[in-house]
Image (tube, rainbow, N blue to C red; front, top):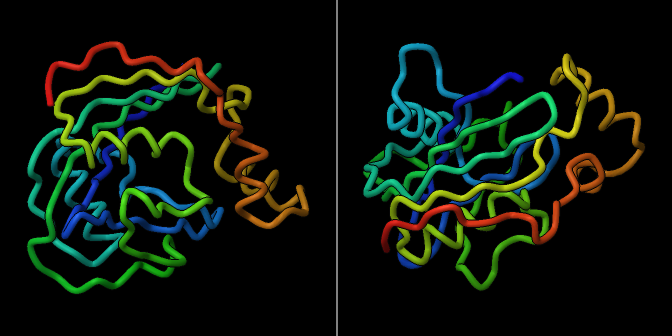
Amino acid sequence: MSVHLAASVAIIQSHRILLIQREDFRVWGLPGGDVDSGESLAQAAMREAHEETGLTVALTRLVGMYSLVGNAHATIAAVFAARPAGGVLSPNPREISDIGWFSSEALPADLMWWHRQRIDDAFAGVTGAVWRQEGGWPFPPGFTRRDLYAARDASGLPRAQAFHQLFPAPGPQAEILETPGK
């Protein structure tokens, strides 16, 4: 099984969270991505926030560690809460098709299902929560990003609908393993 480390950032200001709409599937989520070689989780979170939003951020706390585990692929993600510290809001058009601030009561409908709990935890002030979500990469070993985009395109569906077809939400199997504090 391949394991990837990732980091995401819940940038919160005035009781709203900054979300990005991914260009590849046109679904919404937290800014973030894979950790590069030689990079800490915090460094990756700040780099990804800047690359995807144009903002520099100050990390304020670790919200938690989250995992998506599938048959051949697992992602372990650190989610940090942050506040804007500089820069100009300017999404990277190669990766991001839209960007916006949302209240907890008005999150976009086409949200990556595994980001909903992370966003809820960030808004709630959770710190150090560990969340395990069943499901994740539902494809066989060796299935690449190129294969994923080919499956998306072959579906004939709008990108967000293709995303939800390829990555169905697992239902109530997700469980909190540990919640050390708020």
